[in-house]
View (tube, rainbow, N blue to C red):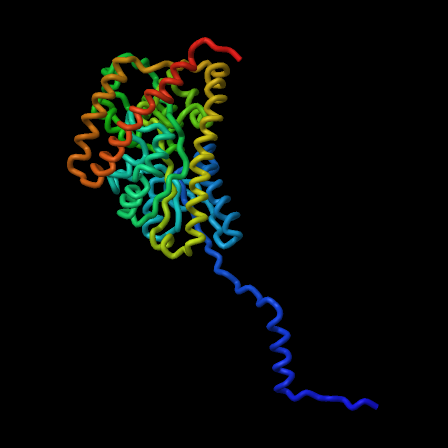
Length: 364
């Protein structure tokens, strides 16, 4: 009979530890950040609300569950125009809207959104990435205790829906028009009565006659709102918003508390959404314009040279006057103007020249 050998308790413990050390240690459960995103858009509204949804989806997937962003439409937690306050004070972590909605709080935000006769979408994105725009926007939004990201762009918008013909600049006098941002300031200078309404309130206001005219976005979104039912004339181009930026704003304390890898995920998600939203508007506007004209018999008209020339002159005066007493706005404005000057110089030989060439008779 073989003699059995027994190990002491200390020996057993040592052997167990040795075996255990050959296996991977179990992963330590990581903190899951549950974030809420409030928006200025009606829930799931095409292009705008769905752009916010896409941002949340990208962040949630790329973070592998470490961040869970839930989207709320306008009015579900706070009214549309209170979204920036809710984020800045930490009630929620994140928001999605348009920078000119916050001009009553920090004037310089409206220059980040869109500038009359300013940059197109391609130029606007170039300004953010290569012209110092991101740094300036972060400086502006820090006044609201928020971090800023461009998170979508509508591209060039339409000039708006009107219940009367617009032939000269005098036709703006006494006109009750929904038009936000710097474009609204120019319409005021032309004698209009400007009303600022969130998107969801526009259709009933136009239908009831509370306003005589409105701009919203372009064919895709305007068709979704049914604006053609309440106004006869649809004018172009959108001189007031040649490329309207959508903003993702994040509570600055919540942003600073993120580890670097999650910051990178949020940043890259916004870059992807910024491009995806612009691409969607380009594609959908093509089809929607055809629907408005062919199915709903919308009267689509160009603004007259008189109107555009006078609006252009007013824009220069109004914008210079507005920034004169606001150093932060002036800093953003001067940066945009410098970039615009360079862009026009190059566009003359590239985009503008090609656009003119493309309308010449040519068939595939």
